[in-house]
Length: 82
Image 1 (tube, one colour):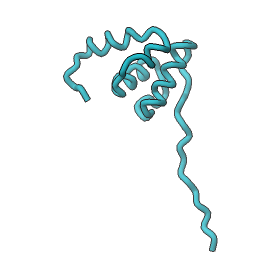
Image 2 (cartoon, helix red, strand yellow):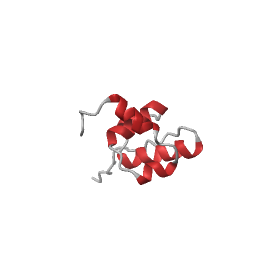
Image 3 (cartoon, rainbow, N blue to C red):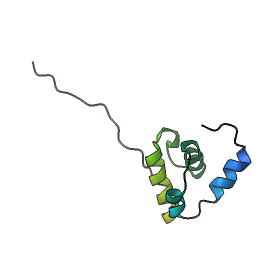
Image 4 (spheres, rainbow, N blue to C red):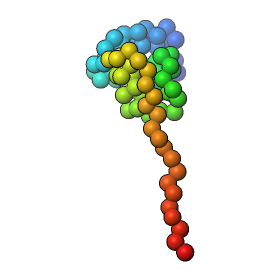
């Protein structure tokens, strides 16, 4: 993780995301994706995996709406036969 990057540098890089292909064509650090997702209001952005963040951002860029891409991760219930 590159902690030495300035806020202005991160903001400039985030502002260059103008279409869905920008998410696919460049390398984005997970921290950058989380920051951008948080700024646009993606629910639980801090808990999403990188691929889930990319999916949410592509959707936002293409359709202009924030959608909840939080997967339903539950506890596996194993029946006990006895």
